[in-house]
Length: 134
Image (cartoon, helix red, strand yellow):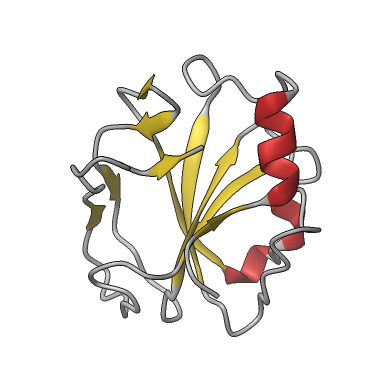
């Protein structure tokens, strides 16, 4: 699988279920040994087993322009656990069963990564498409 927006997440954005600017958007580092992405049918964070969610960070300074989503680089603190092969963005509702998935990223500099207890910083692309483009 290469980087993609979840189908149900796109629907949620288009039907006003996800407001990029005002919602709490998080990134989670994912061990794909136990998560096989189904980009058109996975809908909520609960599709990714808790044991395969290695670390989470809240995105700050979110912005959008012309359908392009951006945010400040994300730092995951003191990351330990299994090898990380993907980053998943989602809207946090406080409950994994209702937190909609937005984007799946598995093609990026530094992936896969092996946590060593240190911080992990994700530097989003500064090109035309930033984090993602609708």
